[in-house]
Length: 415
Image (cartoon, rainbow, N blue to C red; front, side, top):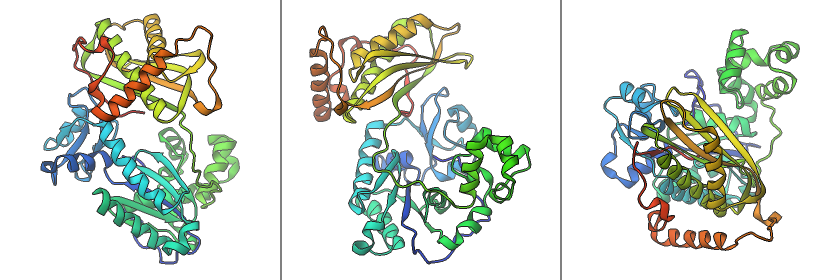
């Protein structure tokens, strides 16, 4: 659910010459919400918000009619309900989103092996090697949209350009349910009609700095002196954004984009003060992270926790292990120790999360101490096999069978 600004005045047709425009950005429309409609057809045509069901949760996705009312990702559910009182609010189902994402990515990988997955619902493709087999870039973009609709039942928007940054902006302007080609000759005119926040890499803070300096559009940035931009943003950021403002982006589509971290968070329906409840949530989160690590054939060296207090004060604590791990037991032990040292904040805990960082491929080798109990790893891999056949609720650690339900936690989207 992108927050990047779009230009209402930007044209929807910049020409039909797709020569050299072999970079495609495919972005699913309202992905989580669209999957929910597929799973429950009664939601078809209704304004829909996906997120925590209680007023303490946050929005992860919404249909476009709801977005038009000002609802955006990360917004508290209570505020979203005020903006869109008629909307239906449903909780997220990560397993189903992952399954539908796999179907979409499978279609993309059948088009070209050069696919760079950015997130669960978007990816770059370089189709240069597919032109002879499938036709022009625009033909391929139309094929992708048709196949995703016919085979998966979802809607995708596609941006087509000569470089990655422009293709990504183009897909945003193609939404909803569209395709936008930016020919090479139209790249600079297209960029220069956009607000500066549309540039890939301009976040909220950078946008504020630029706007305070009177730089409101991409054209303003492109025609600003490098000396001034260096003073405002620093040399590295200013030069990168200056090049992007002129449509210069040398980055290639990278097939293997390594995960930087794997984590999950839980927002509680009411502030939690009971340590057993919080320890149970940390344990469940640790096993979820471990399962995702094993699925990706990754191990992690650093375990981190995130705790948000009732007054919204947020702290992060982390520890680096003697060796990398992909087991829930090791992750939970580290997370519990970090939380024990931090303690329960006054007023209770509003949100808690676990994250595994400093990842590496398991194929790089994992050191094993002489006293390591390898039965833990074997047990958890057996759990994976059971889950894949009978579902996640079929088997879990014994300590989670009867957890204290104070606060009735609701999962947010995984990081």
